[in-house]
Length: 130
Image 1: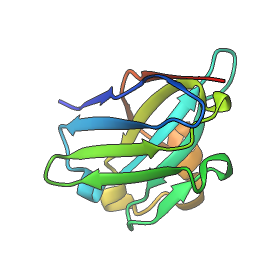
Image 2: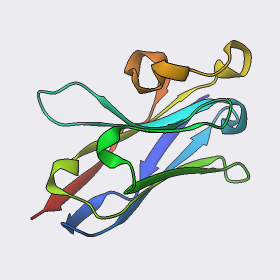
Image 3: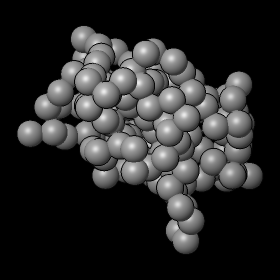
């Protein structure tokens, strides 16, 4: 059974840092496409960062230079290190995974599309105050 469980969210002041974790069970992230999305009320889910099946790291422009996505195969865990946080980063953050990348190949330009991922966690809230 597939489970994705996020942790590490919280409330910080602008300029602070947080590290999100996503523990995955049910398949190996080493052969999957994995990513982080965020969503605020009334808006669509936005792709923040991802590790494609070919190892390519992908980021949305607004977080480049501030966020770093990584994964630990031994722990089957995905991470998102968030530095220099801004109030505009406030959102619910979700971990997503697509195990079929193992056979279908990397997502490429679709990495930031929510419907490209089959499995999701329940989210962890990040709040950044000015």
